[in-house]
Length: 453
Image (cartoon, rainbow, N blue to C red):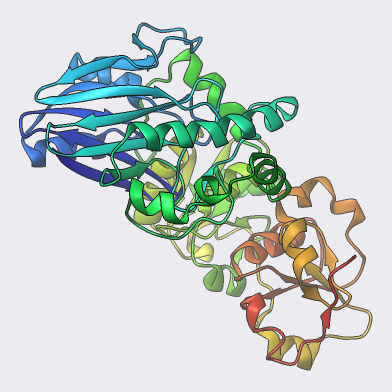
């Protein structure tokens, strides 16, 4: 048995190609299935089966498209109310994939109908746990409905125990979530590989002997998650179509100017340093970088369903289109280029200051506001003295409540504050982007506030 890991760091997820040298099973493929196709070609194997551990909340699946393209069996829990033909599979059922035996194990918790898969080649095992058992943690349990969270957390506690009981201690563990995904919860370890035995020794879901304590702790530590998650499962139930990854013809200057003048969402994907220095007035900054949080925050912050126009280099625009397709944002328009003046000579160009913590100490006036756009739990743990907290994902809804005057905007790293500064400037506010790590603020001499009681 060989396992090929297909990383999607932009969403903190992994997909897997599992094969015996001849035929293959694909588990939890993302919508851009060409990456899976390439992995199968490089391995010299035929895809005969595709499996889903659950109806995903954080991305659009490529499973249906992939299964149809290969005439493969599409293994989806028989209890999932999907609207397409699939090969229903239930708890305890086994399937042969060449020389591999694949066993489905019901592991409710992340969702009610979650399955894990134990794959055995007669010599070794591999466990594909989806959003159940993660490295050092488990999948979050509050994505289905608030009223179900407590019950699902109890289910999660029982499920991971059942899963490790059915697998060998030496079995390699391959979760889908847990690599930066908002679908994970608890103290994730940051590991890149693990075994069932290692998790038995270190995972709090397996080491905590008190189920009620585990439930209370996990629920208390659940934080906000992207609003676009609400749109993922319904699409996956219906059966999503293929992604369109083509870069559209670049908009001409007149049309780009019109969109800016009309207040449409023009998204600049250049580096935040370049954006702060010079950008088309009315555009917003969502810096693109492989492994960055571009996809999650754009899908979370901007109004769902609004037309987008991407601005940036051809490579960044192409990659951004691929990333956005994974969460169902299809066919954005584009203006390809990195010089705002050249893209729209008749449009106004804007800028704003970008500073480190030393710049805050040197330049902030007494009536200015430090605006913290981190999540509320981050702010509660530690904050700049006197800072006002408006989390980035709430900013567009709370613009009227943002204090008047100059705003010095920070987050944990500079990424979210770059987005926030651009949104605020677009709304007519006077902003300074603090592009610095929050962890360096105290050492730089910034007065820190006490965490609230």
